[in-house]
Amino acid sequence: MFKELTKIRVLLLSEQEIAELLSIEEVMKAVENAFKEKALGYTQMPPKVYLNFPKYNGDLRAMPAYLERLDVASVKIVNCHPENPIKYGLPTVTATVLLLDPKTGTLQAVMGAKNITAMRTAAAGGIAAKYLARKNSKTASFIGAGVQARAQLVALLSVFPTLEEIRVCDLSPQTAQSFALETKTKAPHCKVATFDSEAEAVRGADIVVTTTPSRKPVVQEPWVFEGTHFNCIGADAPLKEEIDPAILKKAKIVVDDWEQASHSGELNVPLSQGILSKQDVWAELCEVIAGTKQARTSETEVTVFDSTGLAIQDAAVVDLAYKKAVLQKTGCYIDI
Image (cartoon, rainbow, N blue to C red):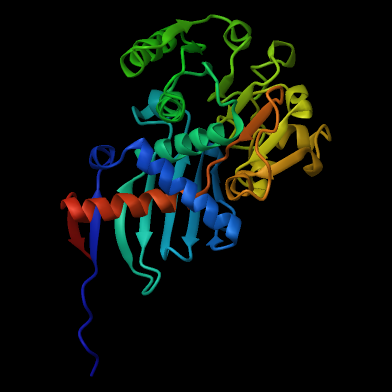
């Protein structure tokens, strides 16, 4: 006779519960450790799997990862449907992440992944700036002022608490103004300014963060001063690009993952056009963190971090949220 099987208890965590559990500082620590594991060869991260829904102008992506030495496995499912807000009153992007027990393959937790995605993406930007931006950076410019820009701001402030000026430019003046008002509460010591022109916002900035969905460059090479660091976040799918390829040609380029960046990151368009090649890419971020590739080597270098968002980042943050939730008795359980 078969032994009666034990029910599987699965922890459910809402977006609100996750937001209350996590701080950007601990998320950055977890994400940086995940990048170190990648550098050392202790991660499994197959390429994103895409399902396209052309008749609905949308897509769905599955992102699995395994941090071998930490024994953490997860799969994130994320969609992008730009018509959702107008047609259905739903967000353009929704996401859910599953935490799995590698020993048994069973499900441990199901979590809303909007906050996890925002924080882990921002964490990578903050980590990149820590290694690649000038240590005395005083001015940060944000091109795009949406949810991710606000998350990137929090991460940057944790790395550069002495920033003196925050600039913002967005296609929507109302969105830019809202970002500015929020920034004044988070960084009351900073001068905060909104700009109608990307050129005005970028000129003279030490750090430039781009978080737009653009399919043509919104930042041009003549506006860029020596020593500027770019966090390029918005280009996360084929045909997207935010900065002039001429900037990339003269910059030290660091990607989060070559395979993903070449197909869906800031590099994908200039690579497909033959403007750039793999030889133009200096390193993956994990190599810089591990010290096998140098970070910034001069005050005049222009540096670019091309972020596409990695499943190992999700795994690290999901594990953190799960452990904190269990410790604090947050969330609810279901049996499946």
